[in-house]
Each structure stands twice: as structure tokens, then as C-alpha cells.
Length: 331
Image 1 (cartoon, helix red, strand yellow):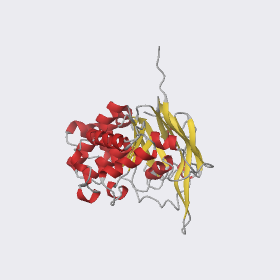
Image 2 (cartoon, helix red, strand yellow):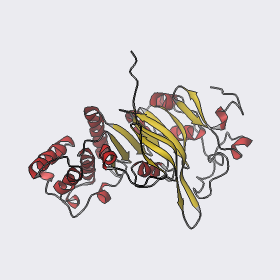
Image 3 (cartoon, helix red, strand yellow):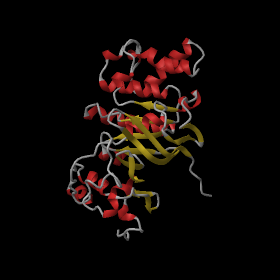
Image 4 (cartoon, one colour):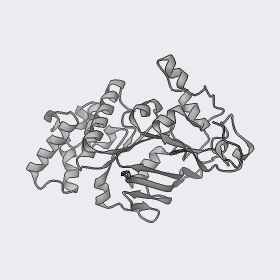
């Protein structure tokens, strides 16, 4: 009997616009995707692509302009809903890019980790809270010596471990990781990633991993999605994604990843040099947002926004090159 996979997160036609003095910024413009329980989805994009806006909207920090977000089939956030219940806040946690700015400098590590336990009534008294805090510290490989330290007394990697510990305190099922290692040096990055993978396996967690590092996602995620100017342009299972990328922007990014061996170089897409610069999100080009930089553009690319096309099982590309209305697919 085939075991059906259950969805943990579903995002439907999500839009988030901001009104500025320069005009309307379409930070996220019609994004849809879903994750199964136990998935690690790598959401990759350059600065300004909209990936962090998706993160903050999913977590309820921003209210959607349009669209709907469901957690385990329940709609917890949409255009008309401005508050998220404690039930969903407990189930879904976030680890921010800069741990220094997300930890209260006037609180000890013990106080920081106790707060979510109090808010969600995880423990009954001070004794239970202290025991739980010690257990959480052990989970992130930190000793009890950190209990009465303040954030400014520890390093960047240790601060991020405390941020992860705070997320784990309420026993979540889903954790959104917003560039959790980008502000750390390489040796600490590796340690944090190994710890996250071990925790994922031990606690059966699901991760939405937001990053600009495509090479990292190859060894971490089981699905990868690429964002450009507020839209997803390609999404696929990791092996399929790295071996058979289709969108010109994806191929451009993959061809620029540094490699260590001739075999890795052989597997990379042919080097693609983009034209021009990323357009302003206030003045997004008509049609496909990437057409101003794409060497394969057709006339239709300047006129119509491309649809998301399934080019293989679970492999979707948002590009006119693969729409049968305009051109035959050649793979």
C-alpha cells in the first residue's frame, strides 16, 4: 500500500506589495508552492528577489496583499487575517539571519530560552523551566555554563545556536531558516549545518531554508526553488534540479558555482553570461522579468508573463521557452 505524503505547508498565489514614495514594490508576486512533512525546501535567490519577504509573510510578520497560506491543511493566514493564533506560532518557528539582533541583549540566555516556555505554557513552574532550558542547551551542543551569560558575552556561532535553541523550545514541527549561516565564518557554518541536519532527523522537523548559496542546498535540501524579482522561476527535486536545470536564470546561477574537480565542472551547465543588471522591483519589466538579461529571449517574452509549466514529474519552470504555445520543448 502506497503511503500518501501529507502537506505541512501550502502557499497559494502569495502576493506582498509595499507602497513607497517611488511607487509600488511587488516584493512577492504570485508565488505558489507546497512542502510535505519532513521536507527541506531550499528557497534560493539574490538579494532583493523576495525570498525573505516570503519568510516574514509565512511567519505572520507581514500580512499578505493577496493569497493564502495553509499549515497542515488549515488556512492560518490570508489577505483578511492579520493575527496568527498561538497554536500556529508554537508549531512554526523562525531562525533569523543575524542572531545578534534577534536576541535581547538585556536578558541572560536562561531568560531568553524561558520566555517561549512561559508564553506557550510548556512548563508548570521554575524548576521544570530550568530543567527544560538545560535540555535545550544540550540539544544545540552548549553547556550549562551559558545559562547566565548575556548575548554580548558569546560569539556569533554561539548566538545562532541560542536562536536555534529558542526555536526548539516549544517543540515545533516546522522551522523557517532565513540565511542562518551567512553571517558566520566557514568553520562555524559547517558546524551549524551538521547540527541542523541532526536535529531534523532526530525531531522529524521540516525546514524552509532561505539562502543565496546554491552549492549549500545541493547537500542539504530535497527540493530547490529559484526566485527572481518576486516570482519562482524554477522548482524541482534536488537531484533533478542540479542535473537538468531549464530556466536560463537557473542555468546562469548554476554555471557560476565554484567547483573543485573536473567532474563537477563537467556537470555544470555551459557558462552563461547575463546581460545588463537586475531591474528595480519598483519598475519590473513587462512580460518575463528576466527578459532584459536573457540571451534566449523571444518576442513573446517582452509581452506576456510566462506560466509555470511542468517539464517533468514535480519539475516546474516559469519560462516561455517551454510552453508549447510558443515553441516545441527540446531537451
